[in-house]
Amino acid sequence: MDIASPLGGKGKASGSARLSSEQEKWFEQSNLPTKLSNSLTINQVKANNYQAIYFAGGSGPMFDFINNKAMQKLTASIYQNGGVVSADCHGIAALLNVFLENGNRLIVGKQITAKANHEEGRWARNNYPFLLENKIIALGGRYSSIVGKPHVVVDGRLITGQNPASAIPMAQQLIQTLLTLGSNQLLETSY
Image 1 (tube, rainbow, N blue to C red):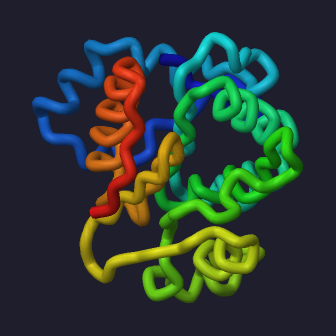
Image 2: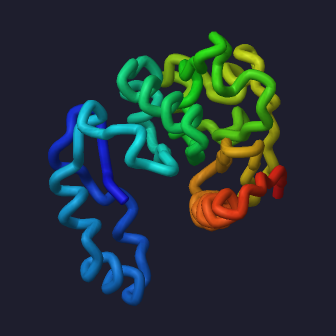
């Protein structure tokens, strides 16, 4: 596993203050702090070396991921090579302008979730260039959401989580899908 960002370099472990003492110990003993301090640039990541790509949420993706051509090309290549594309919350912004070799957007006709309009506050409505739910529907994605619960949607090799509460079940589904792909089976689920 590698960590990449548009500019590379030092990243921040946002949300790490919410880790339990057991989780914090695991995090500190893993190689994640080192990888966060030395993230790759998107241009350093070669699609053929990866079976999956994951886009984390937060406000950054709404500005940094939406028009990043290198990120879009990498995502399309991983998907077209048989890999899994996954994102949670606002990370789904990275998927909106991904075009496949056939000229279609990755999300067209796909079941997908992301941060719902009803979950967005005043700051988001005043600062984001768009709301994800509206944009996904406008671009031809088959959007769904659930009120007040984690929500993960799987459409073949596209896995999306609605909100921060969906991050863990989305990661679990990503692992399950990768294991299943090893058995040449694809899943289609929603929960």
